[in-house]
Image (cartoon, rainbow over all chains, first blue to last red; front, side, top):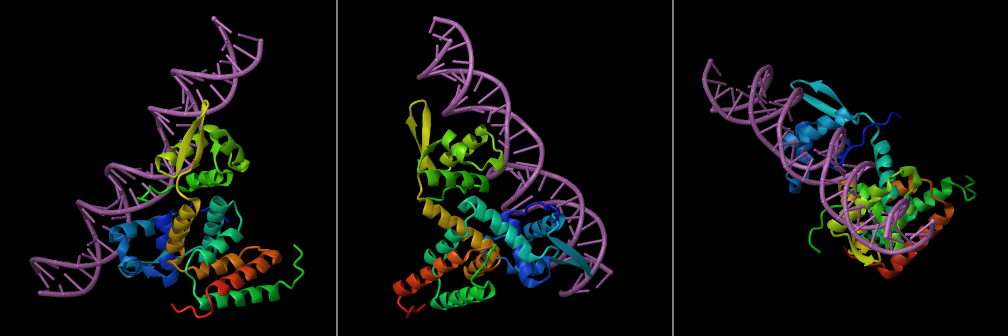
Length: 132
Length: 132
DNA sequence: TCTCGCAACGTACAGATGAACGCGATTATA
DNA sequence: TATAATCGCGTTCATCTGTACGTTGCGAGA
C-alpha cells in the first residue's frame, strides 16, 4: 500500500531472479544473471541493496552472508510494473499488447493451445453475463 | 538501424502520442498528454527534442513551428521495447505475460471473443504442423 | 510601427541509475 | 598459521531522467 519507490529496469531484472529462487544470497543471484550482461558481482550486490532499501526485498542473516527474499508479493510488483508499461506504451489498453505478443513474436502451437484453455477457463469463471 | 539510444519511459509516452497522431506540433502533442500527468508545455517540448536527438523522430519546418513525425517505424520501437521488458521481467518468456494480462486484469467478454478469433487466425496461418 | 504571445533553443539542475571500487572483517585453504 | 577468497558496507561517479526556466526571434493585431 505504501508507495514503494519505483524499481529501475536493472533492479527489476535482479528482483525477478530472487523471486524465481524464492530466496537467495548475493552469490546465488549473481550466478543466475545472464552471463551476456557481464555484470560485476559488486553491481548485483548494489542492486540487491537498493531493492532492500526500496522495500522490495528483506534480508535475513545466515552465517556470514545474508539471504534476500521478497518482501512484497512478486505478483503485486509485476502487476504494477505491467500497468505502468501498458499505460505509457499503449495508453492503458490491454488488448493491443496481447495482440502484439501473439502475432509479432514466435509462439508455439502448444502455447496457443494453452492460451485457448485459459480463455475457456476465463469464460467459465466469469459466466457469460459479466456485469461490472 | 544502428543502435538508437534507448528512449526513457517518459519519452516513450510522448513518442506514442506522435505515433497516434501521425505527425504533430509540440502543442498538438501537449494537448494529447493525459492531464493527470500535469506536464509543462516546455517539458513536452524537451522530450520531443530528445526523441529527435535519439533518432526516433524527425522534424519538418512548417511556418514558425516544427512538425514532428516518426523516423523509425513505431512497430519496430514497440517491438524492441516489449522485448526488453519481457526479457527483464519474465526472462524472455512470452506466455507468462499473456497469462498475466488475461487473468490479472479486467478484460471484457468482448475482448475475450476477439482474442479467440485471433487465435483462430493464427492457427489458420501457421497450419497445424508448426514444427519448432 | 510597437507590442504581445507563442515557438524554438539552449541551459539548468536535482535526483535516479548503471556500474563498480576499496576496506575491513571473516572464512576457507594451503 | 599465513594467505587467499568472500562478504557486506560505505562510497564514488559519470550519465541519464524528469521537469522546467529564461532569452530571443518572429508574425499578428493594435
